[in-house]
Amino acid sequence: MRATLIAFIVLVASACSPSNVIEKGLTPPERAVIRGAIDDISRRDDESLTKKMVPELATKISPVLGQMQQLMPTPPLEVSLAKANWTIGGDTRNLDAIYQVHGKSGWAMVEATTQTSQGRTLLTGIYVKPTATDPRQLNSFSLAQAGAVQWAMLAAMVAAFAVTIAALVRIWRSGLFPRRWLWTIGAIIGLMTLRMNWSTGEFSFQPVSFQLFSVSVSKDPVYAPWMLGVSLPLFALIALLRRRGKAVEHA
Image 1 (tube, helix red, strand yellow):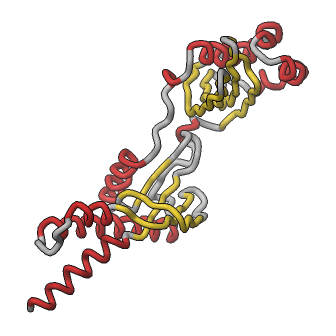
Image 2 (image 1 turned 180 degrees about the horizontal axis):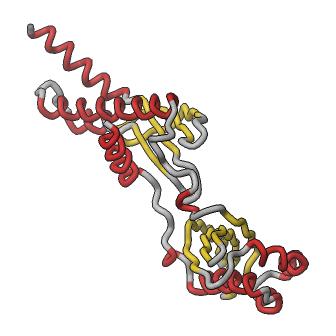
Image 3 (image 1 turned 90 degrees about the horizontal axis):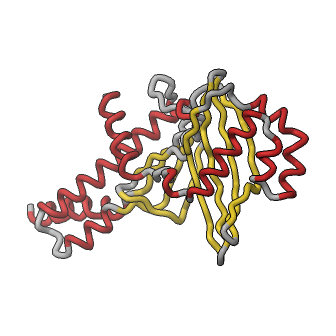
């Protein structure tokens, strides 16, 4: 049972969870500025760091550069991108990127924002937060620590997914649905979404939303908690009930 649930979660996660933006999505100047700034903080090189920042940020960072250096792991550093988002307006591009940094003394997350305008990329913000372990291990998914709420959510997700698959099979094999493609589209869409934070067991409800196959699993960025979602497979249920109703009529 446990192995089946794990396989189910992995399948849904691979199909539905949003992908982290790969580092190739950043421009070379953006990568150079952020990675250079991380090295500057690690070396406490105020002069080099100042050249990479807008003036108003430089006046704020310089007085606390020593404290930021203490928050950074001890070199040599391994730096990798965890998440990135950007917006483009006119000739200006704004980037918000989160990097995970590993050194001899541990781990840290670095969030940096940049602005590219008139061919020049500068830092507009940078923040360092040490973490106790590899950020990918934070808020891990563990069935061993699951409580009644987590198991109930998993059961609801398995049920919703199973109803969807059963409805699809009956739509295509029963001969009772003349517009099978329309029924299929309706069956794979779940309406409304109940979401649960796996780490805390907290729920949130989205009355206006839909999900493919009525379930979702996401963890974005890598250090965030796993979020599970289940929706009502309304049209799938209607398809199953219609099948049973027809069976009664022909009996």
